[in-house]
Image (tube, rainbow, N blue to C red; front, side, top):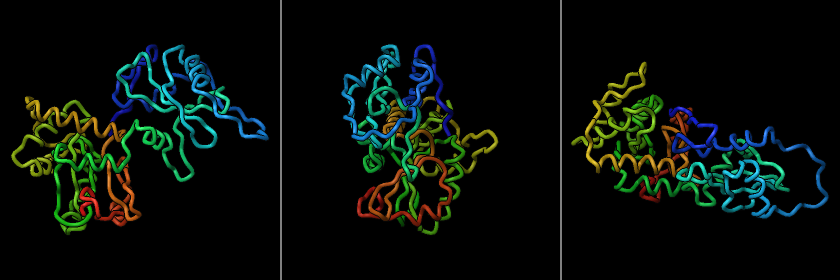
Length: 298
């Protein structure tokens, strides 16, 4: 899995490309210990705060270093704000939450009653992140140079890093299911775990037989050092480096925080996205379906 991002706390400059998830605690440092205090239930539903009022709070909390670009209605009377950061102009916008009278910011991940990531759902709603169906459609395009393993069954799309030990564990568990035609795996190569990941991903994609190269990487994987077994390509072509960078960007745009990231079509007709090693691949397989979209194996 990827290591947690780090920050320069004096400048709020993110040192990791997917740092938007943890920028919120910096706002807390700017205003001390802000919290939503317990209040008596109002007799009437208060009007949602205006963009100007939300911006005033965010500007004060960040000492003028954060800007609310837009607002939208959130769950439980909260207001969501799409925020950019002056000290990190190249960082993607993030979603933060404001209480009903714009007197406090809600710091931390917002989780729904069934464990849903409401932060991610909101980011998808306002277009900051790709919805799972959009991410799956993009991952299935020829431009990703994905590697398809198997010829029968529903398709599980896996964003895989050559040095990711959990990807390796998943790869091993999928092999027998692929061999008996229970499913197919679409492997999208990314490089996010270690410095050597990029050159190893390049070696796989540059090989005459990328599927065999991926198999070689996994067969010689060293669990102790968490290193894939393929020899790095230290002089990849620009086309290959551009492809890996684009795959990294696709995973980030889909909200992926680490590998493996999984996409699949479920029997309820939706596209599901999971991050990390699934608890049980057979349970996962039981939730999958083949069609009708080509990305699902239809």
